[in-house]
Image (cartoon, rainbow, N blue to C red):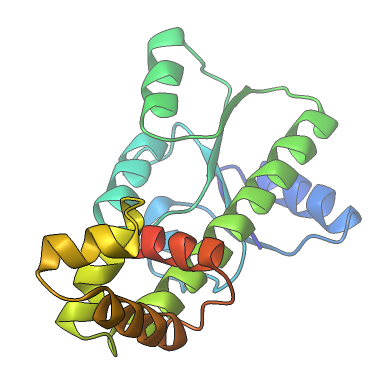
Length: 197
């Protein structure tokens, strides 16, 4: 889904037609308040945002979304580009900053890249959430053992550090692996990394 925020109706219509011509869905808004009053999509999304808008500017909307923890890739479009403003937008996380008039293919490429990145981010977030849910079943001792695994320690080293036997470490490690649905040591280490252990 591509969200378009521009106060010029002709530009909104033009962008809607452009994205529609390549099979992309859009929702267009005339102001930042109008967009904030809507519902954000629950799939890969990109925000094509005019820099200068009545009321809140595009930069203010970018800051507001960031403060709310809304992580949507943003591509700024503007007829009033200047270097300090574009640098500010990019430092705040914008993916691209295009000056009007821009080439249609340039915008399509930027949006396609943004949608791909957002899809990957959402997929990674779903996996992190799933692993965190699995980790709720872990005991304190299993977490201690996993922390040793994350540091690359051998079972006997983990046993020494925790003051338990190597057999007990193996038991906790095996149990933790089952709870995390780990299919290999590499998969377990990746999941430990996702948990931030």
